[in-house]
Image (tube, rainbow, N blue to C red; front, top):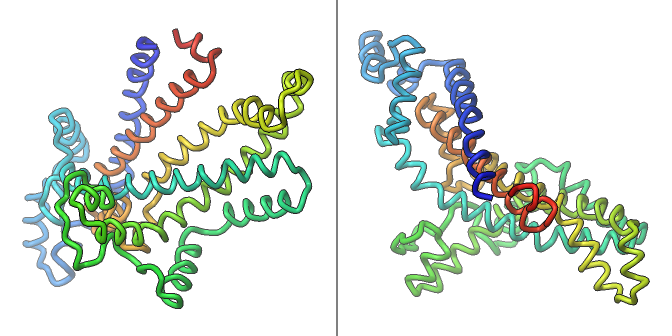
Amino acid sequence: MISFILRRLVALIPVLILVLVIVFSLVRLIPGDPAVTLLGPGATNQQIEALRQQMRLDEPVVMQFLNYVAGLFQGDFGTSLKSGQPVLDQILLRLPATLELSICATVVAILFGIPIGVLSATRPNSLFDHFTRVFSLVGVSMPAFLLALILQLIFATYLGWLPVSGRVSPYIVVPQVTGFAILDGLLAGDWGAAWDAVEHLILPTAVLAAFLAATLGRFVRNTMLEVMTEDYIRTARAKGLTRAQVTLGHGLRNSLLPAVTVVGLKFAEMLGGAILTETIFAWPGIGRFMFEAIKNRDYPVIQGTTLVFSLIFVLTSLFVDLLYGVLDPRVRRRMK
């Protein structure tokens, strides 16, 4: 197992290097000059040139890349052109918000998606099965921004049940211990602050969880329909096992292996693809941070956030492979 992990970690190095080269090159193709963006249209040529020299944008692209890579080996992700603060510090400051949102969305999607898929597979072509397939189709097809606007309009504007945006209310002040708003509120003993954080989390969680729940439900349904026709399922029934034991102990257990891949990869995509959701709900996470960086042509921030997203994605892929070994003894034997 240890040798397998080491091999996978070594294999990640060229992947990250390739991602770094591609991102560094594409960022330079973004239209506009960051110096002009920061100074505004009224800046003189002398001011623009002085700022470009200060930000070392006047150096050759190859030299900029080598300096950036040298800084990465020292734990330096660069300095934001907009705020002048270290990029890594700003990423670590916003990472708990994105993690909190992604974890909650993944948990909600699992709690809804897997049971829906199982019930739909055990009742094929029933009314519930038809409803599930329609739900899956709508959940996969509806754009995140449209669902976000609909939920904001209904639950925040018309009904007034939930806040429209933000992570906590402006009057809530809780010491940040973990960076997770709900957990910090509980640790401080402020139940009102914790509940306020939960209320702000509901709508963005629903938007992110809808797509994953629909995908997971359809995936589990199709996989279970195939598994339930296998010979070992008929053998389990012949042994006198109850329907629940056959469905959950044999059918669902073998159907979860492919579903683990879906959940793991979708979770990684949430961390890197929640830009639109975080922007609509004014969620102070990495996605919104990256969106603002793209608007400001903030090269170091774009490169740093993209590198962090890539690292999270490949590490999640490694974790999924290890989880395969835990769930399937055949895979575990190949890892040794």
